[in-house]
Amino acid sequence: MAGESHGKGLTGILEGIPAGLPLSSDDIDRDLQRRQAGYGRGGRMKIERDRAEMLAGVRWGKTIGSPLSVLIENMDWKNWQEGMSPESRHEGSIATITRPRPGHADLAGAIKYGQKDARNILERSSARETAMRVALGAITKKFLSEFRIAIRSYVIQIGSLRLETPVSGLQDDDFFLKAEASPVRCPDEDISRKMVLLIDEATQKGDSLGGVFEIIATGVPVGLGSHIQWDKRLDGRLAHAIMGIQAIKGVEIGAGFEMAGRFGSETMDEIFHRPMNTGEKPLNETTGFFRKTNNAGGVEGGITNGMPLIIRAAMKPIPTLRKPLRSVDFVTKETVEATYERSDVCALPAASVIGEAMTALVIADAFLDKFGGDSMEEVKRNFGLYMDYVDTF
Image (cartoon, rainbow, N blue to C red; front, side, top):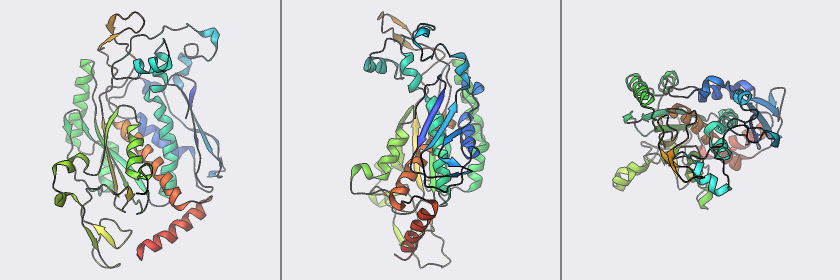
């Protein structure tokens, strides 16, 4: 992926999607619109109208096996054509930024890359580039949906307000419909309303808020990922992807940190088996083996176990504050107030959608590692044979 926050646009290339996947811009734009929504977003979202333009890899509504190329234009570019121009003649057309914001990449990035203008750092470190991650993630979500794998999310916590939910991943469709209807993507109407009021309070104070969101992937087959090397473990790959989202400071799988305070006998998900076609319905319907709990969050030994994948992420408050924090000008070394850049007050609703995209990218990669194939027909054939094997294991 390439592109700066106020540059001409964002570009992305996705390789590996098999030929024959039905795909349209609408499949991508739906998630781009979900990313832009959410109470607490900043003024930038009033300017942008994110739309995906597919430049390569799709013909007549289906992928053709070659790399997919996607473009998202920045509507705000018209206001930055000289300030972000690639032409040297426009140098100095806007003021340099030398007052780094605590919590951002401004100072560390300026030192690392030898820059005397933090604009060259913050333009790329900005979360604006996650629009392209969501676009590419939407493509992989469409691919995974062909195998009945669904990836959804909701907000558990904003500030001190928290929704308590069981660790199972078995929330029904109505649960997620309520989350989608909420301005903060929280399915509980009462807590959602209180979260909105808390965001209003932070806005009035010139402050910001963080929180926690949860991603649930259902329909994931047993056997993705591997125990044989640390970098092949699926939980590690998922944690890496989610931690790579701006402002995410913690990731847990399943019961996560809560497990640390329990006995092993209270934590492990006991294994049961039932003959196929009996009246008892297991938590997962892919095999005769099932578990009545899901503290592991769908991964054991770095391998999916057929249970819903549950990933939870903690997001720190947005570092850019309308009431700036203290900083030091890295040219004059004087104590100053940090630079203020237009920003969100709370970005949890958007972060959860970005989390879905990153999860989809990792799962799709592991899925194709396992089942391979150059066309959708070939992948479906490989997948079907494997699932027949799993059902009879």
